[in-house]
Structures are given as C-alpha cells and as structure tokens.
Length: 394
Image (cartoon, rainbow, N blue to C red):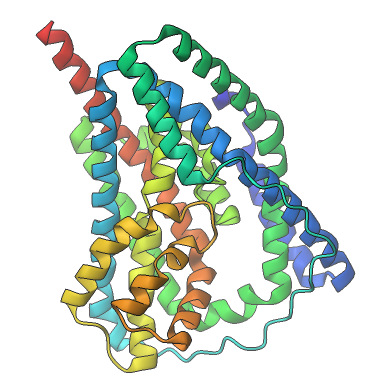
C-alpha cells in the first residue's frame, strides 16, 4: 500500500526545489517571513511524526521476525557501524592525499540576514528519535519473546494508523517544507555565495559519496547473489527528499516508499531496517565530516592531525553520531565534544566546520539514505539464511 503513495513523488520534489530556489532570488523580506512560517510549521509536523513512524514500523516488524529478531538486529547494527567507520576511513585517506594540494580561501561573510520569525509554533514530539527507536526495539523483542498474538495484532493496527498519517499528512506537507528550505537558503545567499568558495572540496566529497555507495551496492550484490540495481533504481525520490530536508529521519516516509517498490526486498525486513538504518547508518555524513575536519585543520592550523589521532576520532565518531539523524547538521553537532577534545579545534575552527558542513549536509544525508538500501538487501539475505537454518534444524 505504501508503495502506491504519490507515484509522482520525484516530480513534486524537483518542482519544490526549483520553486524554492527561484522564489528565494526575488522574494522580499515580508514574503520571506511568511515562507519561514510555512517552513517552521511544516517542519514541526514532520518531526512530530518521525518518532511515531519509527515506533509504528519497527516494533511490529521486529515482532514478526520471531526467533530471528535478536540476531537480525545485532547484524544490522554491526554492518551499519562498519559502513559508517569504513566510509570515514576512506574520507580520511582521500583527505590526506588531496587536501595538501588544494588552495582554499575562506569568505563566509556577506550573507543576508534572515529576519526573525513572526511567531513560533512549537509542536514537540511525544518522544525523541532515539527514545522511539529504543522503545520500538524493546517492544518488538518482548513481543517476539513472549509470543503474544494480542500484542502483535495491536502493533499491526498501530502500524496501519501510522501508514495513514504518512499518506495523508507527511507526504502532502513534505514538498512545502523542502521548497521553504531552499527558498531561505537562496534568499540568504548560501547557495550563490558560499558554495563556490568550497566548490572543489564539495565536489571531492560528492565523488567520494558515489564511490562509497557503489562499493556498498557491489558488496550487497555479492553477498545476496542478486542484482542490487533492483533496489537502487527506486531510490531517486528518497535521494531528492534527503537533499531538501537534510534529515534522514524526515526522509523516512519517502525511503520506505522507495524500498517497498523493490521486488527483491521483503516488506517485513524493510519495515525494520529502513527506520533503523535511518538512525544508525551515517556513512555519507561521517565521510564528509572527516574530510572537512582535515580541510579546516589544514586551513586554520597549517597541518592535519596525524592518522592515529584521526583513527581514534573516527572510531568514537561512529558511536557519537548515532543520535544525530533528524537534525540538519546533527552529525557535527553531536560530535563537537570529540572535535574539541581529540582534535583540539578552537571556536574559529568549529565555526568554520559548521559553516562548510551545512553547505553540503543535504548531500551527506542523501548518501546515508541511499546507502540504507544496500544494507537492507544485505540484512534481508542474512535473515533468509537464519530462517532456512532454523527450518533445517527442525
């Protein structure tokens, strides 16, 4: 059912991006204030729904995994962490090789000031993203362990309710949120003024994203013995949504829609892994942060941290960034303590890092979301193998 929602999603998202960029170039301050209200309200609605989506899809799906639930979750966590740390290490290696040859001059001044909101409508989520994820995992595991048919049916009813909220609330407001985001960026000048300054760095990072995604989908094909193009081909709308929202969590509804169009993925696995990986798989964001950390260090301090220091930073970053999805730029914000304590960044370094990371955050998020499809295929294959082993044992 979910795969039928807004079959023209990709067209709507492209139009939202283009309209937002064009309006931002010509809009005046009073109109921009109205756009900011739309952005704030739609954003509040989307982020209110995110914990419900996680709870509604993850808990019943884990319950349906029965005896395989614990093994599948442990496997999913393991491959997500390995992918994130592997991508970060790849970014560090590329950075050490290329950054000394780059010549970048900072010029982050000259952006227009964004006017204050006319009013601020707060719609706090019923719980945080991480609380929803942990609660969903615990409920699903407990239901599977006690074999409660009543609880499983209750969770399935809740999932149907959440599906309707995705269909009738989240998907209609999502293009508005994306258009408003790009309108503000265009008005501020972040796209036209700041992006060219770091264009060379940004292009390198994006190429690294695509190389890592290629590796993930090749590994998925080898492990599953299936053509992973049967998953990747449907991820266009999710990639574009992530570009607009800059949030894996806010892209969750579209990502579920895309994954469920694939004929080689099972729905019961998708409902677990896509929301799960949206919160723990950050390959694109971590790769980018590591590359930008090296860039800023070279730019401001005249040298890059040694590889041993960076390796410690990368290992810890994989854990610290788990709570970042849902907040644009959240990966850097979640790891500021590591950046200051391990790498020795001062206020100027952290400020510049936050600035250039924000310029590409949408691309890192899009890499995260698209990579989730490859890990879902790997996890689906693992679950099939565990089920076959259990059947043979019986």
